[in-house]
Length: 76
Image (cartoon, helix red, strand yellow):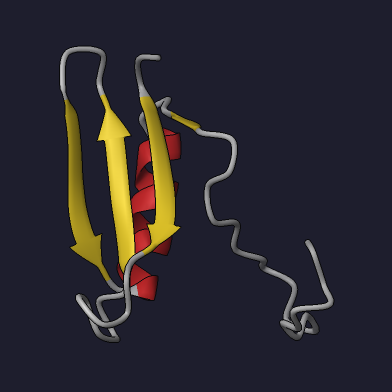
């Protein structure tokens, strides 16, 4: 699928924090990925959305709710 992006967690042992996310994108002719930090993944996602890219299903989702507290029990 063209013009899509995906964010996933990388293998912590291979890419320790803060660079523990993988940002991938497909422009219709090639697929590319880079290793990024949490802040980098969030910034790239916003930029790619502004360029008209669509987020792939299964991509890591970030919340903007300041009251949200992550728990493995929360499947948001």
